[in-house]
Image 1 (cartoon, rainbow, N blue to C red):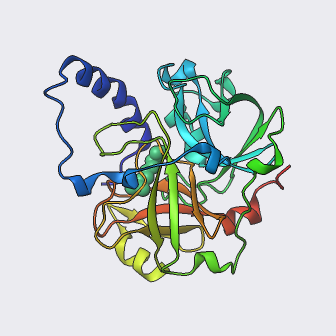
Image 2 (image 1 turned 90 degrees about the vertical axis):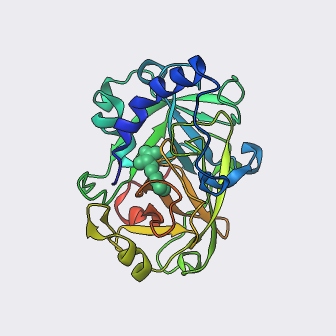
Amino acid sequence: MRRPFARTLFRAPVLLAAAVLLPLASPAPSAADSIVIGGRSVRVADSPWMVALSSRDRFGGTRSGQFCGGVVVGRSTVMTAAHCLSPEVLGAAVRAVGDLKVIAGRDDLRTESGAEIPVRRTWVNPDYDPETNSGDVAVITLKAPLPERYVIPMAGAGDSAYAAGTDAAVYGWGDTTGAGDYQNTLRAADVQVLGDSACEAAYPGNSEGRFLARTMLCAGKPQGGRDACQGDSGGPLVAHGRLIGLVSWGSGCGRPGTPGVYARVSEAMRVMPKPV
Ligand code: ARG
């Protein structure tokens, strides 16, 4: 089943509390190979375009209020997933979330390193369809610009980075097991871009969801085990040093046969406001 993000996210505090109360009873991940987001620790200094979306009011302060990922595509422009800014995830309209911030340059969410930048405005793709997750793209304009070196180039239509079999990496602070194990430090998983027909075969439009090649791409590993998961949404899928996808949805996390699905950046570029 495709898991609505909000439900999983809101369950997290309960799971975390249970883990604190019952440290010995917390279940081990089902198998080492089921660890999603692939077990690679990365440093934000090497991926400065990676940012966290934060609201301590909505999500609590222990992990800097992180609830989604984002990516810097202009000095004052961050891309994320449309569903990250939905009332379903935020529990309120985005304009009512007064402490929405973008956190740049912070590896460990328990610290105060890097910078927290307030939001000037948000744009949610008017064509975003919450039923199918098609067009899952939003843009956040920052109140203060980041240094130019934070900006990652986007891969336009026809870029070779979209070719099936291309090595790519997905970044985030999300769940590493599928059981609500949100991370304090940034991680990346190495995956491969899959061809549209493989993605369509994985998600033909049953209860698992439907893959739409115009607005989505998918990536994973044939044997599973490397994927994005809850809390990673809106974060980047990067290939050849360019942004190709934004974490959007999937059936479970890291399962063989159900790769991660991403918003296709080349399509987002057509509809989004020009990065500033
Ligand atoms: N919707 C999830 C989020 O908001 C992302 C799920 C990605 N799932 C996957 N198996 N790649 O964090």
